[in-house]
Amino acid sequence: MNIKSLIFFLLTILLYSCGTEFHPKSDEIILARVQDDYLLASEITSYIPKNILASDSVELSKSLIKKWVDNKILLQKAKQNLTEEDLNFDKQLEEYKNSLIIYKYQSKLLYQNLDTVVDAQEIKNYFENNKNNFILDEDLIKINFIILSLDFDKVSEVRKLFFYNNKDKIATEEYCKKNNLKYYLEDKWFRLQEIKSLIPLNINSISEIKYKEHEFKDADFMYFIKIIDTRKTQEIKPLCFVKNDIQEIIIDKRKQNLLKKMHEDIFEEGIKKNKIEIY
Figure 1 (cartoon, one colour):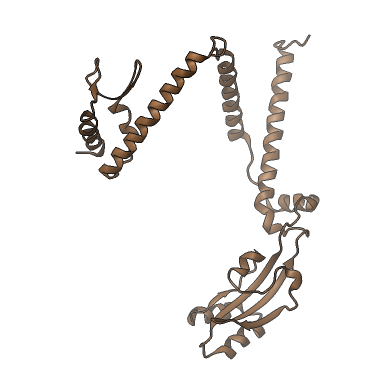
Figure 2: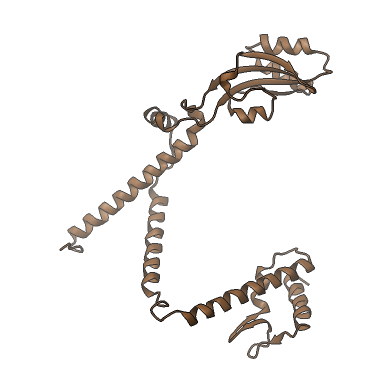
């Protein structure tokens, strides 16, 4: 027995025992009635997910029945208390239909003609010309670190490798992996609060940082850190931080220009073919 058959069977038992009727025309089980509107069992089985527990399916069915009843009784109450003018939606429906038709045509036009490839130079040019639109509202930091357990017995090796072997990050990374050390050696910007969740930096802003390289301990670990770069609040965001935003802006501008040209071309065609007259 598949899940829908099982649900139908359970609903039959549950609801029939509560006085459920059969539909007078189709002999289907009626789950609810609001005046002359009937909800049939077959109408809700498609809303019941597969692989659901039988008890859960019954509870979900009850919820769907209640929602159906609420909507029907509210609709009927509204119809009783609104005038014929209130209930006349012909104009609104026509406008909505027309809007959907136009939207569908524009979407198809954009799909067929919009160039969504934005190269790095275009992104850079936009950034350089609009830097004042990309102001930081929080501190950023670019940092490398290694975290050691307090009982790690090769601290001097790590210190030498991390602080004095700047040219060979691969060797440092391999050493960290081999000794199961937590580390980060990439060239990437982080929000200061993100780093503070990883490393207990006792600062509230990057202006409080007085060092480029530092090591310290807490109750659990030893930390080796290098501050690669920083950006303060109200400074310009790094390009890499806003690259995706700029790409979306450029594509959106292309959309607007394409739609504007489409409107202008259609209007001009209408004038030429005498389809348009403005009095």
